[in-house]
Image (cartoon, rainbow, N blue to C red; front, side, top):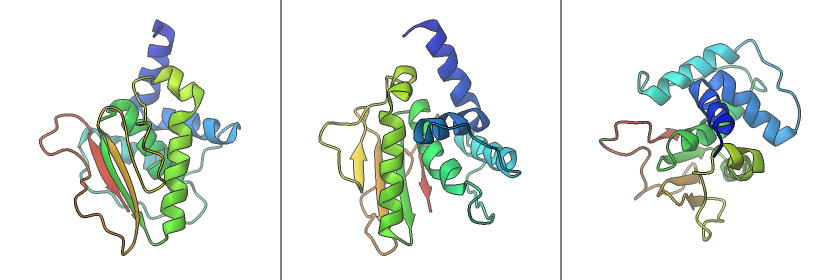
Length: 168
């Protein structure tokens, strides 16, 4: 990878304030417009990636970008940092968790993401909406309320770097 792309990648993973507009642009091909909550939420999410915050609840009105920031961009950035990361995403609706799963895959599979983060790839046999794996051994499980998550983990026990999260 060339030096310029490496610098871009380092800039993007350094702060969620940098990564969210990038992810939004990949999804919508449009400029991201910040909300008044962005810096506060993104700063808190940064602290979860460093381990400074172990549990985080984000409670703001609908349509202020919680899902983009705390699910789509967070998981895509998490894999850019460590493709071995393990995520579990659960919500009340199977349609919502599966839609989020597809959206995250769309970000990671986007040619611009792949140019900057070529170390993040999905296994060829991982096309299910509810469960997929990275070639580095990471996992993403999307399960609605009442669904089974037994046998799966979020994060890696004993890891010294970011290794995933449970996202509800």
